[in-house]
Amino acid sequence: SYITVDGLDATEKLIEILSGWKFDAVMLAGLSFGGFNIIDPHEVFKHFRKPVIVVSRTKPNNVAVKRALQRHFADWERRWKIFEKVAPVYRVNTVPPLYMEVVGVSFSAAVKILKAEMFVCRVPESLRVARLIARGLSGSGRNQGL
Picture (tube, rainbow, N blue to C red):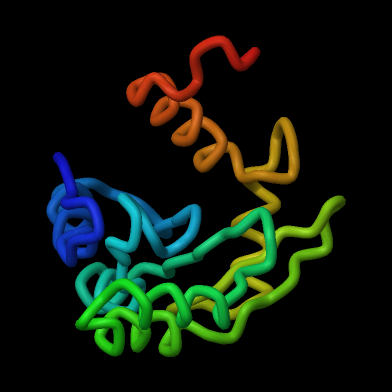
């Protein structure tokens, strides 16, 4: 399934892709995909009644995000509301730290889910493998020692 670059269809597409699958939680590597096509974790949670955990390897800079949205999108307020609803950002004590936002689960339960997925490095295995696959499919992983 494809999403539109800078579109508003990522949430709908994710729900479509996950429908029919059995899972215990949804883990996302950030909120923005395909530029600023933003997944609304609250909508995903509402649809599936499963925890949504948004993981970032660097601390999200929401001031910069808001500025970029204001500068580039007439509908910036609609997109920004998704970021506002998901706050706060939690720091996970890994080396170096991870950051996460959670919907439908407590911080401590989300940390347990993350730690159960950390086999190779601090990034949960499902996100690490998904990133490798995406890079391979897009061609951006070529000749980079992956």
